[in-house]
Amino acid sequence: MTILLLVIFAFFIFTMFRRNKKAQAQQAQMQSKFVPGVEVMTNFGLFGRIVSFDDVENKVVLELSPGTTATVHRQAVSKIVEPTEAPADEEATGALTEPTLGSTHNPSAERGADKPATPETQLNETPEQTLRRLEGEGK
Image (cartoon, rainbow, N blue to C red; front, side, top):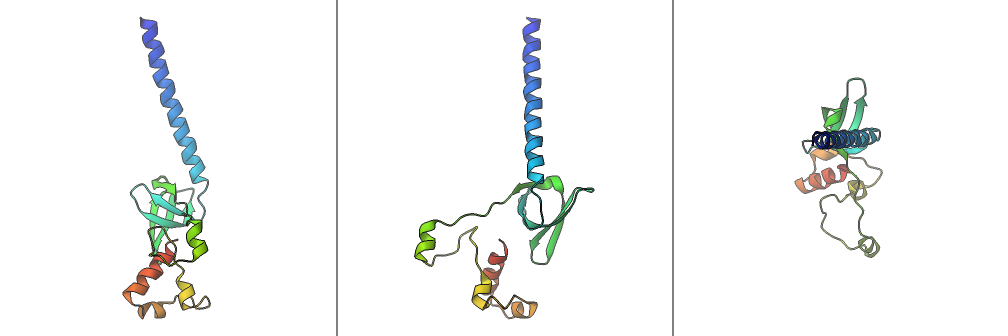
């Protein structure tokens, strides 16, 4: 009876260490993909783009919106946000649809690709234009 209890106890310890090892390997694989420009989500639901990271101090600087940055611990970044693909039939027809969450918008196409958004042009925007611009910058 004692031997059976020891075997069960050893099995539980083995599975616990194995699960921890898998989680550490997955975390290390994700952190190896950290490069500036990658969109990520933190443990507390904050989305941003990596601006820089410091391996020595384990800090990541995220750009939350243009000009707004936040510094978080490297382990607070929980996942890399993959861009979503649009269905092929909508792209082929060119149908105009209402933007959805995760969709991309190119505001430079409206004002001309040669005219980047400047603070002066942003001051004269309507609220609708500001929303469209911010949705496009959140790629």
